[in-house]
Structure formats: C-alpha cells, structure tokens
Amino acid sequence: MLKVGEYVIYQEQVCQIKEQKINEFTHLESFILVPMTDSSLKVNVPIDNPNIKNLMTKQEIEDLLAKIKTIPLIEVDDKLLESEYKKLFHSGNREDLVKIIKTTYRRNQARINNNKKTSEKDTHYFTLAENLLYSEIAAVLKISLEEAKEYVLQNVHN
Image (tube, rainbow, N blue to C red; front, top):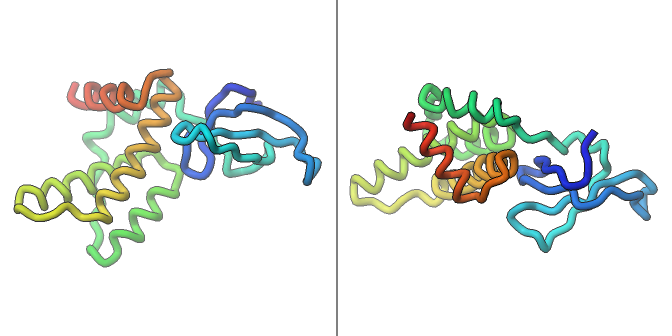
C-alpha cells in the first residue's frame, strides 16, 4: 500500500503523496498528490485510482539503462509520427519513452547537421519523454533532475 511521502506516477507526471484523507465531496479515501515539476499544484485522487502507478525500482532503472543502446528508433511514416509519439508516451512503458527520446534526438540532430531548424513536434515530445523519465529516476534515486540526466548519460556510455 502506498504511503504519504512516497512518489508515484499520475497523469504522466511524477508526484509525491503529500496527504491521505477522506474526500469531503465523494466521501472516498483519497491522496493529495503534488507533481515534482509544480509544487503549487495539488491533485485530489481516490487511492484506488488505476492511473496511479508505482515508480520503477533501482534494479529496473539499471536494467533499462543496460538495454538503452538496443532499444530501436521509431520507424513510421512522418505523417504517422506524432500519433506514434502520443501512443508511446501514454503507454506507461519506460522503453517507449527511450524510443521517443532517441528518435526525436536523432531527427533533430540530423536537421541541425543539415542547417535546418529543429522540429517543434520532435522537440516537444523529446522534452515530455525526457522530463518524465528523468523525474522518475530522480525520485527513485533521491537525486535532482539534472543529476538524473547525468546518471543516465554516464551509465549508457559504459
């Protein structure tokens, strides 16, 4: 059972459980969740909400990092790319986040190398996927978002 102080994923955001109480309107037991990225926001969610998901374990993070290099890029027609990004982002699968990060990064780098502007769509999904993945890693390892990004970069190159 989840407890006050723990971190969870809710609505594609890493949130801390700040409080557990009875909702005055529904009379159901609920959590007050606060997203890591916006501490001014408080979300009241029933404790049995199926959209509340546990974070990865440290071992699951290490396993993911060990296979990042083998996770394939997204291979779809450009017209279908945004719907594929959306589908993968909302899947709840961390490997799908890595696919988005790798694909959008490579596509934008290719554009930069050809003296073109980066794609807003690729940049948007890169940022979404990166923030969710690094927020989760930061919460699990109890480090900052920047340290989580460094941790990933260091452990992928090894």
